[in-house]
Image (tube, rainbow, N blue to C red; front, side, top):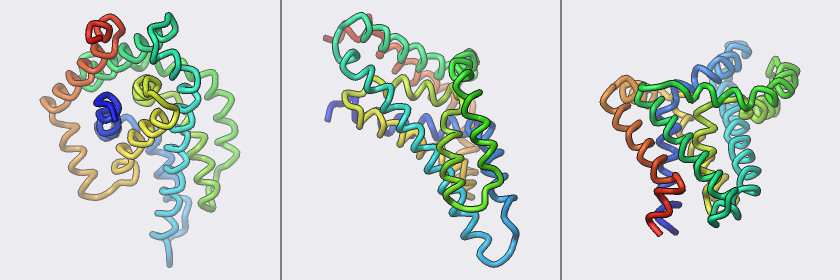
Length: 229
């Protein structure tokens, strides 16, 4: 396993963990509505957990699917110094830099990237509305699978990194690790959620993380990457 591939999985998880605030803003309302839709009574907690878990499995599954589709186009090109490969590397590097600037709270330009997926989401959002209200895990799974396509700068930034992985499988797995990093806040995991919120409110920690992402982004850019060969 190459160092680049090894570093991508924990780093993708780390991005998801730190970006949980963004995830809560984008998807937290859906998670809350899944709980509110259930009548309080015997077995409430079990049914609540099943719906939330199914929803998040669908959401993370969509991330992996998107990464696999992008990787089918990018894997062969990204591993060679072709014009398309250099464009893909440049896009991935710039997205990582933008995400680092956002994490460090220096510039929120990553929000403009979210507009890219707006046309597709206009077509998918009516399908998501038809699934509501959620009554069983199958519906929650389907809703999560659709909601995973919601335009999100955090997802796009990690997707740009995943697209540079050497295989379709490793690209999909990168997004799985990213999705797992968002789970604690999305599921409201008690002490873990408090710990995450503590890290996210620490300005020095955010700036340090943002700086690391910017370094990763600069290293991904073709001109700098070529100097390492």
